[in-house]
Length: 314
Image (tube, rainbow, N blue to C red; front, side, top):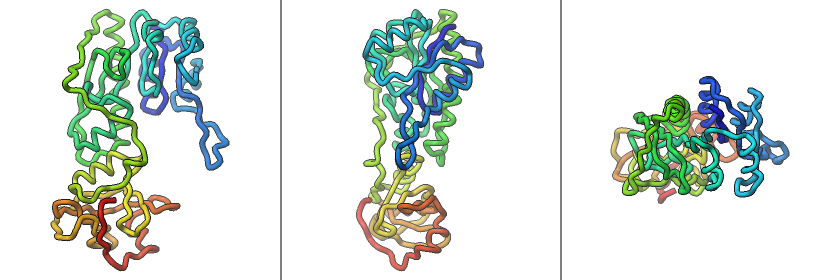
C-alpha cells in the first residue's frame, strides 16, 4: 500500500521500520524540523525518524506548519492511500485528514480513551497505573478522539520507568500497526467509538513538574521519579538546599515519626528521607547541579551530610 508516514522521535521509528519490513511503499515521510542542539545551539539535530527515512532513501519533508497549501500540495503529489502518524507532534488539519482514500491512522501509546495527549506513557506511571498499552485509531478533528481499530494491553512492572516503558510500547506499536494496516487493506478494519465518559488526558511535561512533594506517600514519590525519567526528572532541595535530581529511589519498608522531607539517615547505602504517612524513600542515585549522575556513595565521598534537616514539600 502507498503510505505517507508522519513521526518524529525514536518511538515512531519502530512503526516506520515495521511498515518498510512488511513491504509497504513509503512514498514520503513528514517529520518535525531539525532543532538546534549543543551549548551554543549552533548545530542542527535531525529527528530519529528523519535519519531512519534518509538511510532508506525515502524523501523527507519538514514543514514548519501544516495549515497552508504547501503541505497539502506535497501530499497530493505523493498520492498516498493511507497516512500513518506516530508521535509526529503536529495536529493534522481537516483537509489533510480527508485526503487519503483509506484514511489517516495514529499509533497512540495508551489505552484510549484514557490518556489522550502528548505524554501518555509518563502520566500512566505518574498516576500509578498497573496497566497501559497501545491503540491504533482512525484520526479525527479532535485530538486522539477517533474511532479505535485495535488495542493491546500490557502490565506496567512495579519498577519500570517511563524510558523502559517507552521502548516496549514503541515495539508493540509497530507490531499492532501492521495488524491494523492489514485489516484496512483487506477492508475488515472495525471502527469502535471511544466512550466520552472514560476520557482522561496526558498533558505535555514541563520542568514545573520536577519538584518532589514529600508529604505524599513513598509509593507516589517513587512513581513520580519513574514517571519523569529521563526528562524532566524529579528533583528536591531537602538533601543539601540546592536542587538535585533523583534517579533511583526505592521505597524502604520502615516507619519514621520524622516530618515529611526530613533526611533521617545518610550513608554509603543511601539517603533516607521521610515521606507522608511515616513512610521512607531511599535515594540511591542522584545528580547535583553541574555534575553527572552518580551513586549516593560517590556523592557523599565529596559532599558529606553532617546533619539531618527538616523541610517542607520540594
